[in-house]
Image (cartoon, rainbow over all chains, first blue to last red; front, side, top):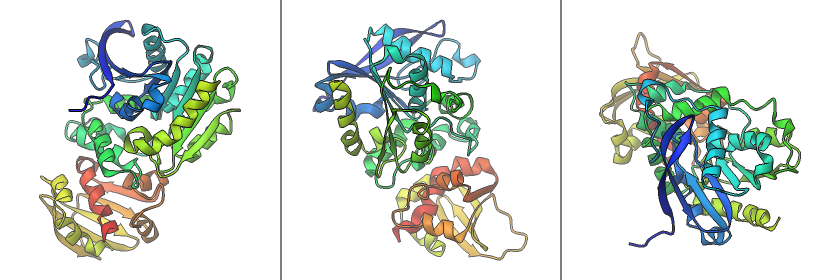
Length: 280
Length: 118
């Protein structure tokens, strides 16, 4: 067995006045790079970034599974209420985790819901962060399907969530990586994807405020796969039209999960961005 | 294109397995043309071409001929590569029992994309 350099750890994490057993992975040393997974998935999506020696030479890459996701537990009492991610809970979780690990001015990179929340971080926490990278960033996504079917006792949640994720990927991405991305979705707990989409499709509409983002305080890089129809290049363009100084690149042939659906192609886009951040 | 779906699906166990447990008839509209697909345990037992009189179906998926042609390209353009991509563009309508459609969504997606392999 060939071992990877990734190390996984558990810790007790304070989240919304409760204790949560949180799981995170890391590799490398240097500038902290905190990676945020997509709705209904977990940190395994970033395995290629964590395993890339060109990146881990200069960056301490860290990804945590959000509470309810992956190997992180939900807080005690989860069985009594619906899980609903909000802008407030999400940003507090990210900044709380960075503080808990003592990360000094980390770079934060997020995809999808994570690509949205970097805009919130740019508004509220720009001075505490070295740079922000949004993957598949849009300021809002109107509901185009009824996500309540993803959490319905008569529909297998894993199968339905997997099928939704499957379509958001590029037909040009390698089959093996696409189906592994689907598998992560199939492993999500009931109602977790739907709970994340509450932030993405209902509560987390940031369209009215993105004009206030000041990229001179914290640089903002946006990378969007062209095959994504949830947060399409056009949606990201609408952000860059309002955020002065944001740097936008369309990733050819990639979809909604660039880091996991086609890791090699994605790293080709990410490495120059990280090199620029490291040289600043 | 759609006429070939039954043969393409039934010959591909990697698609059939996603329809295990499905015993339903659903409608696909390609423009004005109606098709009823009857599925038994993931195999397409019957593919009938309309017009139909008083036939029952569980769900229907309707799109224009132009939309399906874009969807059935060997490598479709962005946004035309997935059933929900068409939904996002407003190019497809889902009618009938949404629960059954969502329960077998992966299967239905693979079935309707099968003509790309032809």
